[in-house]
Image 1 (cartoon, helix red, strand yellow):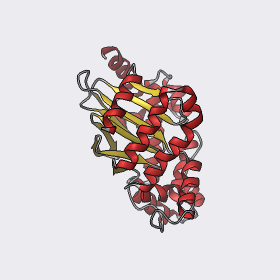
Image 2 (cartoon, rainbow, N blue to C red):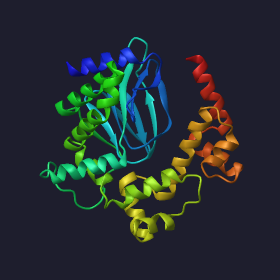
Image 3 (cartoon, one colour):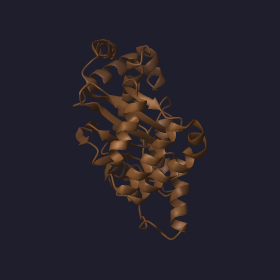
Image 4 (cartoon, helix red, strand yellow):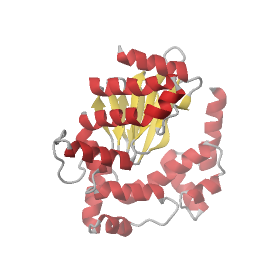
Length: 297
C-alpha cells in the first residue's frame, strides 16, 4: 500500500518527463512516458528508487534492470549508461533520486555506531563493483513515504525536510546496501576518495601516479584495487567519466569544442576520435541524434 501511495504522490507532482525538484535538497522525482535507449550518464553518489516500471543501467558493459522490488545504491561517482526500455504513456515509469551527501552519510554512520553498533563492523576497503541493489524493505518504504508526504506543505518541507531525509538515509544504512554504503563513505576508503577527486577535477590533467599517491598506494596495488571496485582500470574510468560528461553536455546543447575543453581534452581531434570509438558516432552526429530524438518524442 505504501508503494502505491508513493506512486500517486510522484504521479501528481511530475507534469513532464525528466527530473522534478521537491523543495528538499538532493531529493528529486522523475517520470518517463517513452522508451529511451541507454545513453551516457554520470551517477553521482545517490540512490535511485523505481516505484513503477523498469529502469536500465549499464556499467562497463554489464547490464542491470531493476524495478520496485530493489533500489539502486551508487555511493561513488560512476560513469554509466541509463535508459527506460519499457516506459510508455500507458505504462509510465515513476521514481525518486536521492543524493548521498558525504558529510550527512558519514555523520549518520558515526551516530549509529556510537548508539550501539546498529550495523556490523566494516573492515577493509570496497571489494565490490560501484553499484549495488538492495531490497525495498519496510523501513525504506515507510521512510520514503514520510519524506515525500512533506510536499503537501511548504512549511512542513522547510521545517521537517532534513529530518525526514535522515530517516531515509538511516533506512539505507540499516538495509541490504548498508555495509556497502558504509565502506564507500568510511574515512578509510581511499578508492572512494580518489573517485571523488577525479569527479571534481575532470578538466585537469589526471595520472595514475597522482591517483595512487592520493590513495597512499603503489601504482600496482592501486590499479588492482581500483579495478576491483569499479570494474574498470583507472585510465579507462577517467576516460569514460570525461566522455560521458561531454556527451551529456553536447546533448544539452553545448558546442562540441567547448564540451571537450570542459572535460579536460586539449586536442579536438583526439576527443573526436575517442568519442567515436566509445559511442560509434562523432560528437556532432551524437548531438544531432539527440536533438532528433527530442523532436520525435
